[in-house]
Amino acid sequence: VLSLLPLLVVNGIVFGAIYGLNAVGFSVMYNATNIINFAQGEFLMLGGMLTLLFYGDGRVPLPVAAAGAVLATTLIGLLIERAAIRPLWRRRAKDWTYIFMLFAVATVAPNAVMLAISRDAATFPAFSGTRPVTFGSVTVAPQALWVLGVTAVVALGLHGFFTYTLTGKAMKAIAVNRRAAAWMGIPVERMVALSFALSAGLGALAGVVVTPLITTQFNIGLPFTLKGFAAAVIGGLGNIGGAIVGGLILGVLEALSSAFVSSMYGDAVTYGILLVILLVRPSGLFRPLVELTQEEI
Amino acid sequence: MKGGRGTALALAALAVGVAALPLLGSVFADTVMALAGLFAIVAVGLNLLFGYAGKISFGHNAFMAMGAYASGILTTGAGLPPLGALVAGAAGTGAVAFLLGAPILRLRGHYLAMATLALGEITIIVSTRWTEVTGGLTGIPGVPDFRVLGLVFDTKTKLYYLIWAVALGGLGLSFRVIDSRFGRALRALGAHEAAAEALGVPVVRYRVQVFVLSAVYAAVAGGLYAHFLNYVNGTFFDLPVMVELMAMLVVGGIGTRWGPIVGAVPLMWVSQSLGRYADYSLLIFGALYGVALLFLPRGLCGELVAWAAGRRGRS
Image (cartoon, rainbow over all chains, first blue to last red; front, side, top):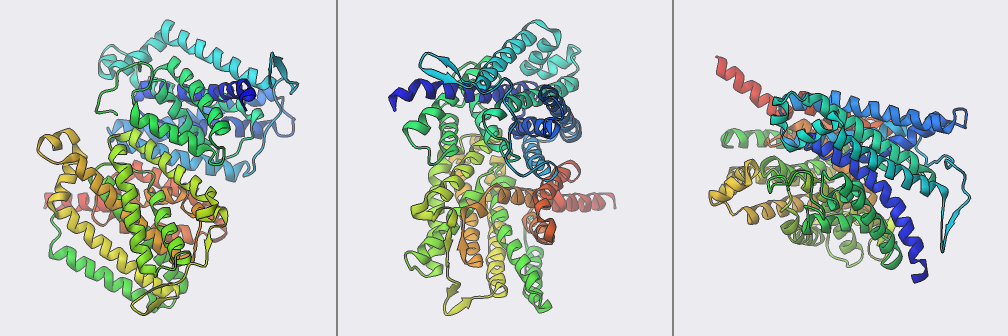
């Protein structure tokens, strides 16, 4: 089995990148709102399923279908914020209300997709063929390189966004102190909406690039929610770079555990890792953007 | 506020109504109401945990599954009488909840919700794959009818009576808990844990105790469910069950005495009346409780109490 090690690690890194992208979605929304999005994985599912819907049997070029799916999911994210979250926000609802509301979203989204699009697992072609690329002893599918490339571009792009643009800095300011940020003239509600759009778009993008490697189905959202959250916690909730690294760590752990421990219980092992992290080190390995207080954990 | 004679009268009236329903002679109605009773039992426990102590659990479907598997395995495999299996299942599930609750309840809010969700998913995955013990996806067929003291509950109507006897007992017990010193401490703990601790509430012990109590409610309902279907399968306890429970609680009124029952009965009717539109069930439940969160934040019971209080205030 040891000779498989490089391959396992590479596979783990590829899926870890997806968890990382999803974890970034968690972190972006958490920073702007202090909300943990129980529907984050649904954005990933929507990205894949909507691409399938638009792509049909190849009538629409794949890049167009994919872009359309990301755009549509972003709009759905905005719609969720406007219809389900903003009313709670305005009446200063208690924390648990958001958890329940997003749990409701995470129930409605997959069932709507199941009824409206398809209940079967399906996939679409890889972006640039399936001829494997060889690096030394490891061969990878070209789609895996797409996953890694997209993750890298997103990580760098977000780093630039939060460091150099006024909007990005404003979003960080809200994470640090919402009231002070509002006093400085930052439009908090608009930033909250932007954070929903951003995490929905990121989730959809992750769903689009990963689908050719796996298959997608209406019900894949929940596993990705739990794994993305695990990655976000490992990386220090709210820390964008940490989220990506947390994803990679989780992906590699998952790949190794399926090979060396047992693959019989599948995702249960990964969820177990999540539980252990939450119980042993809920503040994660890296510094969160804003230190968590005891109240929040 | 305190449950006195009014509450006792209301409980008695509900008992009479429950006893009278089978006079309609509709097996369908008895079946739906039996299922409503099963879910109400779990919802009453969850209400104590969440509505009063403020601890969210998205994993109580796991405790239902444990109770059901305990009843199924102990009656078919070990030949225990159903009542013995039910009690053993409740006790065992309570022990599991005790061991899990101590570490997990240190988490709060979003973290606790996510941790319990993971716990529920782990339990369901393991229950459908640990073939040697649970029968895997085949489940455990041939669970015998519930029987106690020579009474055999071999029809849906008889089980309906049994389930509602347990549900009303559980509801009455929850009222006792809510009005006790323990119940007041739970409310303090739910409002502000640190403040409650400063006032001398043994926070750690109480939050574990209420978690165990709510898990026992779920396990009893799960065990009765196994006898109701004469069959156990882990997929019956997957996340949709949790969605239905959450919807019942939110619609009925979280943290209200009667909320769990008021939510469970109509929603079970909805879900069982869909017929060939059964696929829409979860969509409807999700939408229903999202809308309830927006427009009935206190649930039916809570809004009614607030409305009545407002009227009394004006007159």
